[in-house]
Amino acid sequence: MTFNIRPFDRVIRELCRLPGVGPKTAQRLALFLLRENQENNERLADAIRELKINIRFCKRCFNLSEDEICAVCNNPQRDQSMICVVEEPVDALAIERIGEFRGVYHVLHGVISPLDGSYPENIKIKELMERISDDGVEEVILATGANVDGDATALYIANLLRGRVKVTRIARGLPVGSQLDYADQGTLLKALEGRREF
Image (cartoon, rainbow, N blue to C red; front, side, top):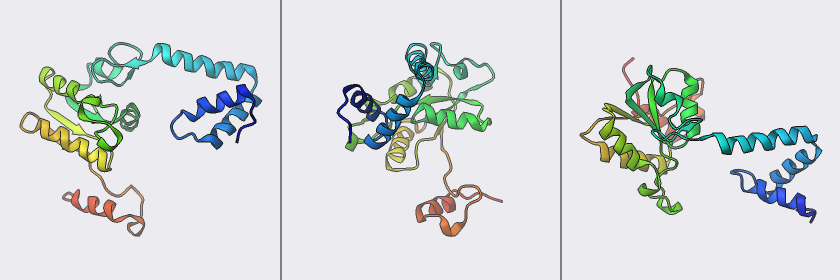
């Protein structure tokens, strides 16, 4: 429910455009912003403006970058022969936080999902194939989601790369510290399938 106050309603409409934000959350956020002091709201507005002005997508891997080529792609210490393919920039950030992956990334900006109108030509698969042809890539790690669309995308890319480079898929299974009786059947199955010698 809105109060039919035009500026308030406009903020709610704009906030509802954000992923995962429904009308009730938008109302709470709008009220929060209304109660905030002007200086804090201006800092938020400036941060959003700066984001749009200064952040772009790397021309090589399509990850977030302040320059044409991102810091990961430009780092001579990174193994350019190993590409980790992810769905979105946040997925690359999650892997980077681990601090162990020494290769580079390729961000697809989506998955193949015909029901949602997303086909191979709508995501960065063609650009991945060009990189593999040009950059001396030896291994492609498919790190798409563990769901139907992520699996379909990984399978599609694996079929395109078959015989050209080594293709691997990130393992799936039980989270560290979890109990077997709390795991769903699919997770348990993947954990059994992904077992390795101990």
